[in-house]
Length: 178
Ligand SMILES: CC(C)(COP(=O)(O)OP(=O)(O)OC[C@H]1O[C@@H](n2cnc3c(N)ncnc32)[C@H](O)[C@@H]1OP(=O)(O)O)[C@@H](O)C(=O)NCCC(=O)NCCS
Image (cartoon, rainbow, N blue to C red; front, side, top):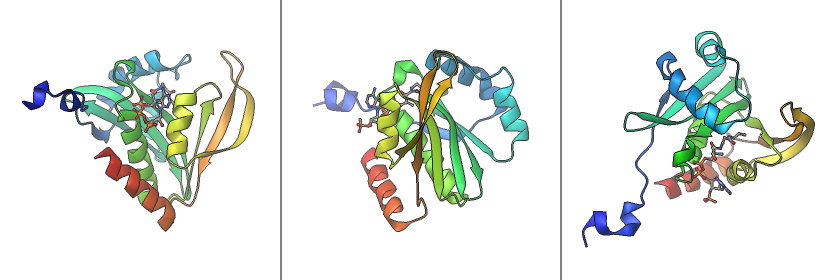
């Protein structure tokens, strides 16, 4: 059977190329942000992060020439913090978010981080499942953290990122993504 007639092959997502975010990517990034979050970062936030924050590392994921995902971390010695992550709503469920999270983890580990934390809305079960898959657990709840609807945030952490067990976990998940 020809590959393009085989549904199993037809459904294989196109590869995601992950690169450092540049100032010229910000328009595409804010378009995805607008479609993904009920509140947006202030107008200059991405540019300020790219220009002035030495602790920040932002990435975009491209399919062909189109930016379809983005995410960022701060890395402060042994601690790292996911500041944002999103995938174009049209292209969710193709493991692009997972690939990007893996990239953020790889970068944090490369820079010496032993911990990674993030906040996620209580209602955002899909994102929580992604994080749990990568070893994040909820350590506390911040009540009424999100001002738009007073929703609480779960604070999740993954630890011992430099340890053998965590590296083995990442290797196994990476292998599945290939
Ligand atoms: C969260 C988000 C980045 C996930 O990206 P995605 O490309 O759609 O997700 P993936 O295809 O990579 O999914 C990978 C894993 O995430 C989890 N997941 C993702 N979407 C899910 C959903 N709707 N329901 C349940 N689990 C989900 C699953 O564990 C999945 O792995 P599995 O299929 O082996 O179980 C994306 O949904 C998004 O941009 N959401 C809006 C922005 C947002 O909420 N960002 C997070 C803020 S904390």
